[in-house]
Length: 268
Length: 351
Image (cartoon, rainbow over all chains, first blue to last red; front, side, top):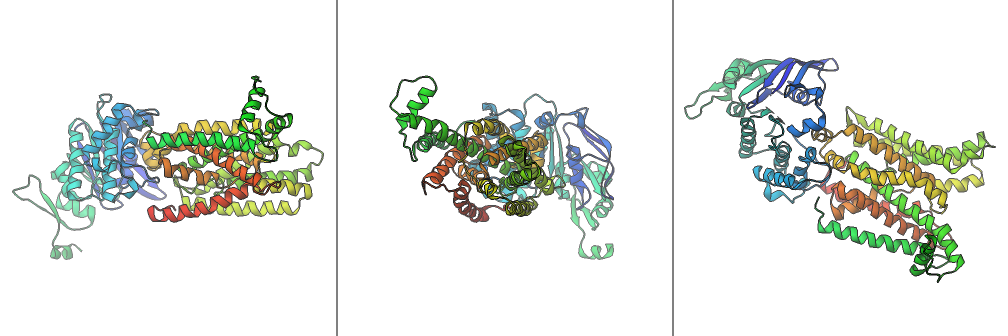
């Protein structure tokens, strides 16, 4: 389990996060939602220990985050960034192998090679294995990074619960690859692990997340299961834009759409 | 790691070139020494005196002049190339080089300043301009410059490469102006010695120099490759490298200290030899790929081979006079640097 309690964070005079709390149990996938600048990325960076909060506690697998050595943490916690720019022309295979770096000292074992191949296959990029990362499109690069994070936290039996933190996993991806990425995260969570994703598409959150945290100006304005927490009032407030919720018999979850033109004028 | 066949062939070729360059460097010059004679002399010196098909003069030239000089070329070439490759990895920029960001000129300014100001202020203390004093001074010059550049370029936990390169330009200009000031105030003997520092030369090679240089160059050459995984991961960015469990801060410190150590020591022994650290990692990357596990050791070998070749050119092109080696490396390196700029302009953003 990963839990954050009463997290506040400030840069200069600006409070980025105010008393934010959430926890993710093994088997769960949490979506962090909110408008640009709501503090989502900062929250994710704090959850991974990249930034130190002004106050608040973070525990991961029953221990304070700060008590974990980075080296150990890296064996069961992986982070997918919005975009990863590489400074050298490594091949796709080499980049995915970097995901295995926490698991070997200087030379990868045959098991590491097998895992890299499986991760490439899982992300559907085996055909790109020998290509230079720098020559790929933004979406292809994002799929390589997806393969890399899964290679990093590939099941090994050593740690009961593994953690995947994703900052906009759908960034640069087309619709089918967005769903592939979230399906992978979803099944990863269902295996008894924890997944946290910052999402922009509310419908993806409804479809894949077990629970959500909705941020507005650094505070949590709604949390819980997506279907209950995401009501019209909350999301309209969070995004400062009128939103409407619709039900359709062929979908098991509601659909969230921006309001029609007339309602937008009323809202303003 | 499975070595690709390209890497294997490249390594083999480099070893052959290393031996070839060694034999040419010790053999060519006013006194010719054949490879067989070289082996004979070396065998004699190591107590296996079975061949004696050489003259006393050849033995003395080889042992006292050429061998220390070729060893210094190997040590400096290898360590500058390895530290250049490490810095390019650390700064995530293929343009990083001890010379370009001002470290070499900071080091040589420290040496020149000590030669001129030291003899003015402490005229009776010969130790002021001794090799050991100058080695220590150049090392601190290199170290302080590296720290200043690094601090200037460090904004909000990230190294801003543009700032780093601009800071390098400023430091080069400043060190150049101060070096010029001391040059202007130098006497004839000091001028000769200053030219040596600013243009670089392996001409002063002695066994004392070799032993002084040995630890400062061998430690970087053998320790920096141990950071290969760290440097590879750094290509993904500092945050991602941290997520991969890598202790970036300690790696940074180690790379900065080791680079300053070998740049300082090599400037102390041979003056500024530019472009070796910049160009050689590029050549190796083109042939063997960007993986630092191959890049660092292969850069060391290539650096050794190419600096031996450059020194051979310096000694023999206009014999009996010598061209400063810094001029040769800059003449070859600067056009190559432009070529890399033009090539990379299409592929990636450098700055």
